[in-house]
Image 1 (cartoon, rainbow, N blue to C red):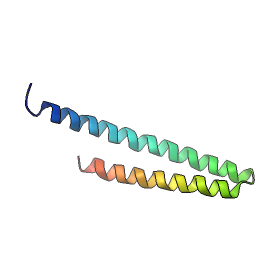
Image 2: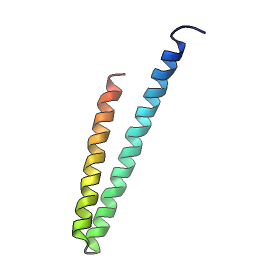
Image 3: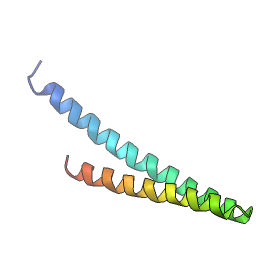
Image 4: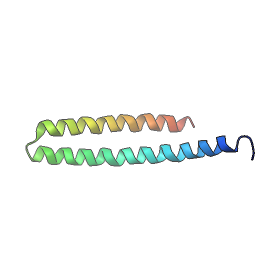
Length: 72
């Protein structure tokens, strides 16, 4: 086994995981925003605000993961 083979595999795995996590977070963020709108329509404005805050945090997490991916 080449000395750096495990290292190279870990880098490839990390690239794949970062791409997956970015897409996964984006999917959840979009779903959260959709449900925040539904909560508003149901008259649950405060609930919707918290869901929107969670969506904003997922967006920030996605941005951080994207920056990490650029550094690989």
